[in-house]
Image (cartoon, rainbow, N blue to C red):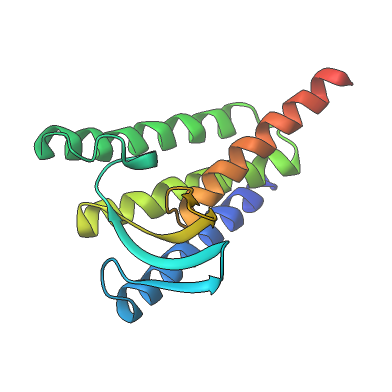
Length: 158
């Protein structure tokens, strides 16, 4: 039980960074504004994504979309917490990863409750090929999942 502070630290750190960065974008960038940071590679933008990754469900009926996109993260976060607390032998990296995933899910859930959309602002691209805009919460979820996969692959090899 002593090591769960790692999960909490990771969770609150991600939520804090996510909120602070999104507030900066909301207050300094009009909707759909774009500022080049590294030409040909990286822009800061202000996008409101009503769907999920890659804008999936963005054009769906608002009532069902909103219900689904509010319930899914709550169910997912509950499952992650059950997993974290039912198997107390987790390693440090696992707890940090789970905290990052939880923090990312909470950050995007906060957006959905506030704006009925998620604020995305990181735009990576190469020439004319753009990756869909994303945010700190999305990054924490992605990195957390990748670190979990990598960690479990390392355990399998041992």
